[in-house]
Length: 260
Image (cartoon, rainbow, N blue to C red; front, side, top):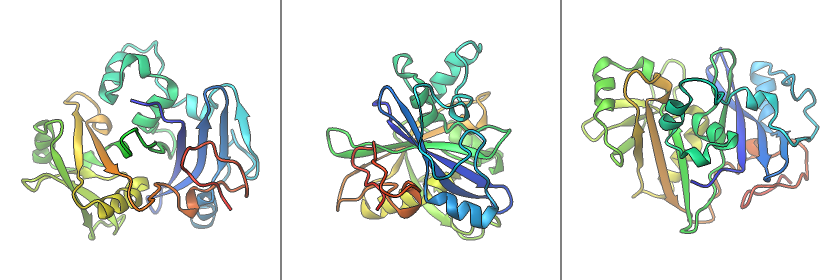
C-alpha cells in the first residue's frame, strides 16, 4: 500500500447528521501542512461551525514538522495492548503503519468529538484509483445482517443503492449483498465521490476487503475497497468544497487542481 500524502478533515453537524469537509492536511515526507477548505464556509452557515482550537484562523496556512495534535490524538498509541490487533483490523502491514497511513484507513473518528478523516486516493501505476473505507452504521442493522457480514468473503461484491426513507438523510447510500442483505451505509462524506465513480464505471463494484469478526468494534467490522480506472479525466475530491479557502495556494497533491 502506498502511504497517502493527503487527508481531508470532515466535521459532523450533530443536529442534521450531515458531514462537511472543512480542511486538508498534506505531508511531503518532512513537513505537514493544514489549510481550511471552501467547505468550511458551508459548515459555518448551516451548523455554526467554529474554527478548531489548533487552527484558530481560517485564512492561515499551518505548517509543522510534527503531526498536528488534532490528528495525532486520533492515532492509537503503540503502547496499547490492542495496538497489534488494531493494525490487523485496518489490514495494513507493520512496516506501513505510520500515522498518516493509520489515519487514512481508520478514519480517526472518536466518541468525544464530531471529526473524521479520509484520504485522497492517488493513482497507481496501472492508472487506477483505490479507495478503502469502513462501512458505517452497523449498529442500526439487524442481527441477521450482522451474521451475513460475518459470512462475507474478501473480494465479494457489494451493490450501492440509495435509501430514500432514511429520516436523517434522504440521500443516504446503503450496501447490499447479492442475496439482498443490507450490510451497512456508505460514509456520508464519500457518497458523492463513490456514486460518481460507480456511475462512470458501470462494470465496477465495491468489494469486501476484510471482515473483522466479533469482538471487533462495529466501526471496524467491514472494510471495503473500490478500484476504478481513471476515465474522462475524472479527479476525485476536486469539487469546490475541497479546494483551499486561501485563493492561489500551491497544492502538494499530485493530480489535484489548486484553487483558482
